[in-house]
Length: 344
Image (tube, rainbow, N blue to C red; front, top):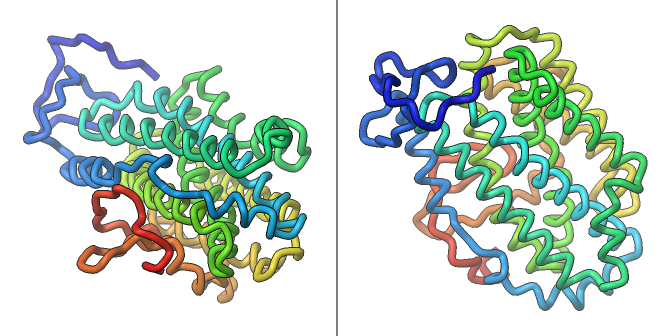
């Protein structure tokens, strides 16, 4: 894969011949003349979703943390460590994918995604440094290194990214692109559900408020890859069997990790509900890129956590809802912070 030149006065900005990859872009961001209008709309939505974690009040969570059971505190710490890893590798990986994109409007969406991933890391650090006792923080930051189950699943997805860096072929680019979609579309959501589960019991409300906004950002990233992966399938050499294997492996890792860090020790979360939810979500994500479901059983057609959906919704009266489970993102509102727990 060839990295785009920064300065390319001989490039062609003609929208009729513009492509997401392998074009001859000048890199001019002329957003009133584009080939992919959906990208401009998505970029504007992502920008309207701007927020600052420190504007959200998590002082109640400092007290609530000690009202959690030991198992809940372990899950809280471990999931924060894992999510920190996910958004850290995303912040580093997306520029490599972006560097070959030759449609400026699509590149702009990926640039905004990079900024949002960085802000998510800022959010996790804000939570860790405010809520978790100082003597535990280094252990939380390093948990992805020291926990065998977590290290294995982090190695899987990061290894797919590294494969493209080490050997930047079109085949490896496609794999990295799908891995990005798998991470954005599957890897966060059992963690989100844990925080919404606590919120449903009036615990850790500030953390849930932060995750509402991270959740909303991640849905825009899911939507971005739902747009570009079908086009990538027409451009890059690939195997659908490999796509399905990546999803199936990701589901296995997600279930293994969630059962390991949460297990059957937290109210409302069981091994069975984790499997049902993760496979349900995988089928949704595959369907969104035009592929048949991987898991055929009827029980994977519905979410066991539908009762938690309202805790992910930052909708206010008069605005369109962003659906947590199906990534049906249609509009966003400017966020200066969530008004408070009473809006739930």
